[in-house]
Length: 493
Ligand code: ARE
Ligand code: CA
Image (cartoon, rainbow, N blue to C red):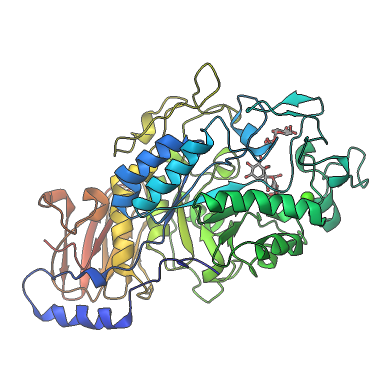
């Protein structure tokens, strides 16, 4: 289990040896296809309709080298405007405000053709949190504990541990796993019939070609319950559990690494304050990093749809510093990164822009990121189409499995090398700053991929502002306030 399961990483040590041999040449380093590691980075396209995701796969995600896309939940949900309606399942029919079953199937196919796998957000801990009866988005009638043909009252936990059966104490394992998360009817995932229904839903999605699942609210299901469900799925199904690491809580992400990966919340909690206080420094690269799950179990991110509305102090609103944090994550040698791309909002509940029938409008980014500092509510951030991120996706593939070396810092600026392959430098401070990063890259002028995007097969030359010199084992950067710059073996000009 784990990342790259269907994409064996191709970068091997011999490549590094080959690259070193090139240092003798005066011409720009030649590039062989096998010099690039396979893509591994994902992108979460939050509340984006299936038809739009299909277009993004073809136009941007595939060409830029994203390996996978995480969608919003694809099952029928309550009929409300807020984005979080998606997290209240009414049935496992694939009819939602984000598109139809046919559109979902077409998206999976078109993304696969573009080299991008689809990971679906699986909401399997619970059904709705509505006390009254209602009708789902696709027309299915339901009550809080009655979902005709699927689940009835006996299929739910009624924990009896708190006055309203809601979780009130995250220090109680029993409450967290058998009481209700914000009033959401909590499925008895220890029951065979419940497990069978859930497995049937996930198998249906697999039959359409999805590569795997984000397991929503995994913390709220006993790890053995999730393991039993995963066991019933075909081998190789990718599983990424959402278990928010909480200090002092009995349930920790490590419990969920036996059958897949987990989102490691510590990563952003560690990096974001460094960027905001302009105190970037070397991570403790022991494996596991302290407070983190082991490298191969970790999916890392700067923010997601919950944290951009909550704990993340760095979001799309911060423009260059946000891209800096993403670039540093992509440059790191820990975990599998997932880039987040949503829409601007000032109301945390506001859903994506929809038509009169409540269907979300299928906007695409046309291959360009938005100007993050001048967005209006509802505008897509299109972060996944940003030049800086495209450049860093290439940089990461060039870096491959090369070791992260101890960094250099000078004032507010900090940078590091992935041994012999690539160098990144960032200045989160408020003033321009010079930085010298020791490197074994060959002498020469290199082009900054954060400024220009991918350099391999680039048709245009490098603008003066993007030129960075490597001489005598030092890469010399001059970084403006908030600037990130990055060069790699094949970005020589
Ligand atoms: C909405 C309303 C509620 C209402 C409910 C039922 O906001 O007021 O009671 O509907 O009608 C999302 C939204 C919720 C929304 C829910 C259902 O965020 O606002 O509720 O959908 O529509 C915990 C969980 C973690 C969970 C977070 C949000 O452990 O799994 O809470 N994250 C996932 C998704 C969410 C989603 C759900 C789960 C539910 O990513 O988007 O909710 O499917 C500490 C703990 C964490 C805890 C955190 C917040 O950090 O360590 O474990 O996270 O506090 O409580
Ligand atoms: Ca539960």
